[in-house]
Image (cartoon, rainbow, N blue to C red):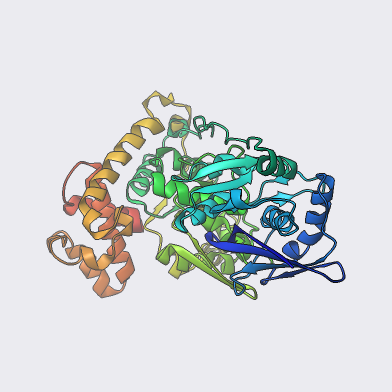
Length: 506
């Protein structure tokens, strides 16, 4: 009887865990048994591994083979264990000494010809290995770039099973990760392209500075989509922690660009209005994969033609808007993903969306109310900035745009405003004004003078403003003050915040 063991990494959502892959080879009828809660893809590994070993010039052990993955109570998914299973089988058969793999985590998918193919989620898997005390990993060459961004881990790569065998037997070198160059993601659209719409530009700037959600209403051609698409261009780059988190999510979803570099720019997701609930929040067979809300984590989720989305899809956003996380329970288990994004809604005022209002609109007042009513009250109550854009006139559209500020200028103001907010709230662990609980703004030392909030309190008492709306106006007022370089908001800031929130002067 022969026994061997190597380390690999399993993944559940974006959470990784070290997995011991052990093999027992005993006399008996030739067979391969996999245990440890494997899914379908992992159960099929026995055929992939056998073909890969034989086609790599190695001898397949004709014995009864039991492969177990520990901890046995953790569900194992995907094809990332193929390479570790092949190594442990060759080690158990006495064909390959495994001393070189002590304290090394191995993962990768095998092709039938012995090639080692990349897998999803390599970055969080290497991060989990590092957290478990592993300082060396062997990964597919296609995953080496993203694996190398995890600090404190020595990454070696392989392109074939034969190369790995030659490394152990003959000391042939493994491959090094490619050198990471500068981020190659192209620049997005610039705010200088937007004609007119001073109110819309101000709303987007305030939203970027404070991490606030935005709803843009208005007729077609007013610039709603242009403004929303330019919001990422004025957001600050992601810091190391946020970049690792975002890159890990995109790695799990399989949408990380080639090269596997850290994503420093805030992501932007704009799903079509026919998107289902599962497409937005996450889904799929087995353990759920991240949806648009998680892929826009630390960035922007833009819902164009928001009133055309189903009510179920829109209301599914309410919980992650509050908590910044999404918990998905399926038959195979629960998966939690981060989902702290800025929501931008854009909608026409009515189904016909005629540009000239009542003069040409074919919709009845009831039809208008029903159409905009598809955006439920509880959802809109969570949107900090709600502005209605007027149609562009000929003078604005045809005027030279030399006076329009480019994104770089606005981004500089946003960066300074965020730095001021971070310095103010750092002791409490908040980074932007949009993160601050309303209770903190209603208590000393951050409570504003009664004279500055008198109109807000009156509206709250009359029921025309909810408690959540009251708190969000306070947050907006602090952001406006930060943009203007003042330490505390005054009555004018509260006035502007109320207009941005409700469209109505207090």
